[in-house]
Image 1 (cartoon, rainbow, N blue to C red):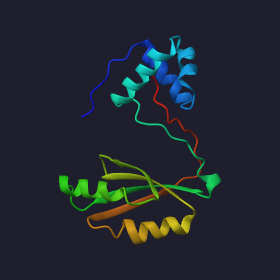
Image 2 (tube, rainbow, N blue to C red):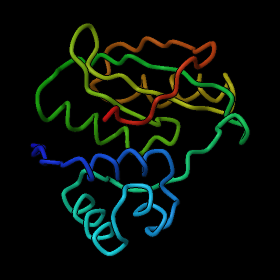
Image 3 (tube, helix red, strand yellow):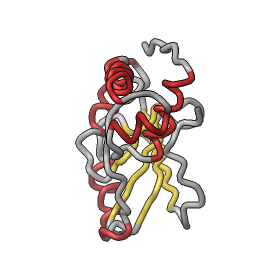
Length: 156
C-alpha cells in the first residue's frame, strides 16, 4: 500500500525541477527552488527515502536504437485467482520486449506495452512466448501508428 506524503511548496518545486532535468547539480536545483544547497539535498534525500522519487534514468529514443515497433497486447487469463495473476505478473519481468505491464479491469486482465526491432520479432514473441504461457486464454494485439503524446511526468 502506498502512503501519501505531505509535501510543501518547496518540495513541489524540487519535484517539478527534477522531472524537467534530473541531471542538474544540487547547487543548481537549490538556486532554482530558492533555498541553499544543504537543505535542498536533505529534502531530495527525504523524497527519495519516502519513495516519492523512485529513481533516475536516461530516457532513450528506442527508434534511434533500432527498436521501431511499439505495440500493445491485451491479455486475458483462463483463471484469475490471486496466484495466477501474480504468476503472470512475475512472468512479464522475464520478457525483454515488454516495457510496461499493467493489471487492468474489464475485458482483459493485463495490458502490455511491447517494443521490438520489427514486426517479425514481435510476432515471434506473441506466438512463441505470450500465447504459449500457461493460463493465457486470449491475446489481442494493437500495433501503434505513431506516438502523439509522451508525458512521462506527473502533473504537480
